[in-house]
Image (cartoon, rainbow, N blue to C red; front, side, top):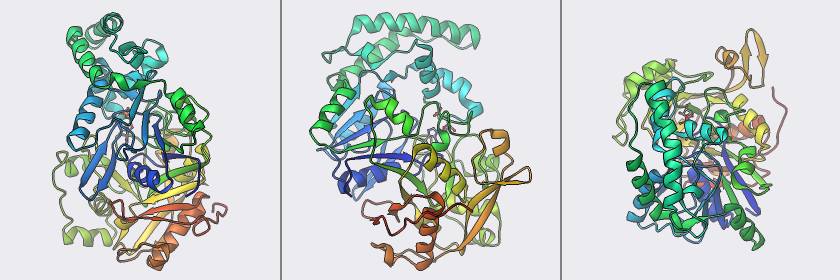
Length: 471
Ligand code: IMP
């Protein structure tokens, strides 16, 4: 793959498998720099190697390649305590992370953001990682940034940071106690925890925009890594059931501080749809409340198996059973929270919206193998809203909430096997992939047929590319 710069972002509701695709492209496109541009510890990017699984949250997904520079951009909501935990975990497993730099302009997620998110985020089903309140403070111009904690010489700036923690923390404590009736936070404890954490990464704090420009000039290929997905974008997603950052091309420019102009703009999508948290989800299989009750399981516990009775029910048309099939076959439980994900058929109206908003010119289709054994597959090609058919994503959630997907049915396949070339896939799977490209209006360049690095196929542009007009 011969491109100088690439953007990789989610084309659905997050959890599309971006970590795996970034890790793969770093190798195949000979990328020298990976920059994460939005989100924070609400993300969970998973990479599966022969010797284990890595779940990354704030650290960019190129970190497993020691020769690649990994940058945390200014658009990231950086949680210093969780960053240090993540770095410790990685170091324990032999990943030194000396190839990581952190933007001095990134906003800090502080303990009061966690408390506020935990208290107020429930109605939106947030990850309770403090992301929304942190971005709120950024916009309100009272946020603390990495540069408040670490000075330009890479040293912890205790005096300045202590003053800022007192100033902002005192106001937050008033808010917690008077407005919400919660306990105040101990500002001394916060100060100690944050400055101890900062000792770990202070020498790695840098001006990311400048570093990126230098590396660009030196000819390094850059990969811009987005978190969450287009339908969770604060402006172009299903507002207000969204995250608080821009997960699209625009967010990339804001988050890295350099005209990114990525040559390849790749949207990652799964062969079906999932969503976590609250919000409309056209074509959802099963009732979200029942999913929460019946499929909740502690993070990291072994996955239950589908019983043969459940399989039969799914094949006989039971929507909830089909939803569970996708959830269990696809291990659809949050990397960050362990929450069961809501599931549905692939929604090409949503994907086309993502293609349009970010000008995507390539797709990576993941988890095709999860559809193995389902005799008839469905793909939403339009919505019916109040009796009218549309192929556009409505801006109002009250319209999206009543949207009825118009499905196209495609024949399924029994097993993808160990295909290493597109031509080796069962013909039905080839048709499925081609239809995705046609409906999206962008070629599928990467196909993932299993969790491991080796289970990804790179496709030439002309193989799955001919866009046609939407139905
Ligand atoms: P927040 O980003 O924690 O504020 O959560 C806002 C919404 O975005 C909730 O519905 C979350 O479930 C969802 N969300 C945030 N991050 C991710 C992610 O990485 N994958 C999927 N959903 C996410």
